[in-house]
Length: 381
Image (cartoon, rainbow, N blue to C red; front, side, top):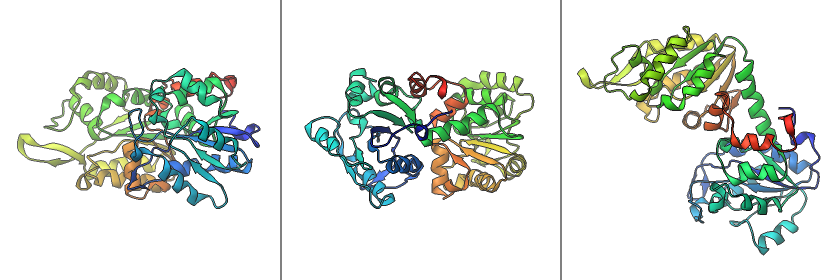
């Protein structure tokens, strides 16, 4: 990517800024703010340029109608803690005279939150006219909403076609980092791939086989490959529909796929199931990770949502946090685990895109990114 908002004139201009502030909220309090913090460089730049910042974000799944539990008001309140002298306003609407008046009276360098985009059914219907009406509210469109770039939504895939549109500093960093992993990683390059369902990781693993030196497997993903090699996995979770795919991948892996050598079992006799990787696997995987110059992690390696089965994931998370190589993490469950264990700031880069990051590294086209590229920016991103 060769251009971002830092390369264009945004001074004093009204800017529609599309973000992903889909943070967990309880009793009106933001429980996690890493997505918000990730956008601060872009916000700081826009404020420094005295732009009029009009924020668009989704939150929760309100089903196209207003729900006070999915209001962005707690997010706006939380954002205030990062700015001393910046005026921040919010409405739960998007259109109407009151909103128009508020936008017309915005001070340079101030922030205005429009209502949750998912309060409006037109958003998830990818409605062109909805986007066209929004485009009238500002001169420029800037996006850092990488987390929804793989979805078809009016504020993601329609707005960039209607306005002068640019990536924010966060999106610029996202693609710069993932492009490096996808095309020219430092070597040795090791990927740790876990999670429950192989179906969601097939494209990622296929792509990594052409780029990575080693792919360490864990969780339900590893179970499928273990069963495909004839290993008895008992009652462990396994997507049997993917067994043929696993065998095909193994035949082409050329030794790059590394499977667990031991497991933590629950149950006994024929009723056992694998719930985590074992100590020998932790030691083996740690050697690969410590010897790598680039590391990519997506997916926990056990049933990590249960603390008693999280030892393997925690041990490898600690290894990667202290590794000398460049560490990049993506995936909602993985990031939730890092937040719970207060490790999220220990990695070189944590992607705000879960499904988007996996799809992008896999080589898939992201609708939101394609819309941005289809703007007059041409080949500049």
